[in-house]
Amino acid sequence: MTARKPGAPMPPALRALIHSTATHPARTVPCPHCTATAGKPCRLRTTGRHLPEPHPRRVSAWAQQTAVCPQCQVEPTVPCHDVGCARHTVHHRRHQEAEATAA
Ligand SMILES: [Zn+2]
Ligand SMILES: [Zn+2]
Image 1 (spheres, protein in one colour):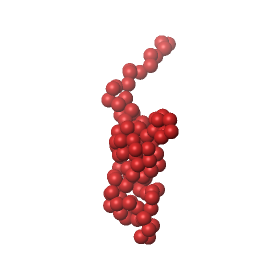
Image 2 (cartoon, rainbow, N blue to C red):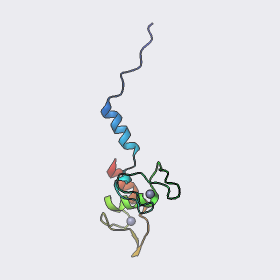
Image 3 (cartoon, helix red, strand yellow):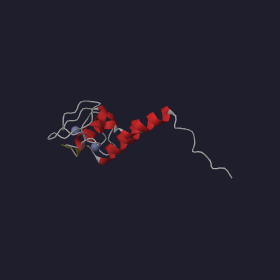
Image 4 (cartoon, rainbow, N blue to C red):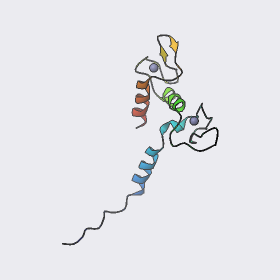
C-alpha cells in the first residue's frame, strides 16, 4: 500500500473563477449609501474600514440596474413600486433575479 499524494494544484483559471464569485456582483455599481465607486468595496463611513458585503442599498441599486422585477413587472433601471407607490428598495424577487442573471 502506498500513500496517495494529494491531487494536482488547482489550475489558475479555476482559482480566478472562485475569486470572482467571492466578490459580490453589486460592486459593479456605485454605492448610494457610502459613496463607494464602481469596483470598490463598501466601507464604513465612520472609520473607513472596508466591508466584506455591499450595503443593502447598493445591492438594491445593482438589482435595479441589471434585472427586471418579476413582482411589479418593471424594466431594468426602473425602480420597484407597490401598486403605484415607489419603493426605496427593490422587491426580494428582483434580488433573486439579479443574482440568477449574474451567476
Ligand atoms: Zn456602501
Ligand atoms: Zn418590484
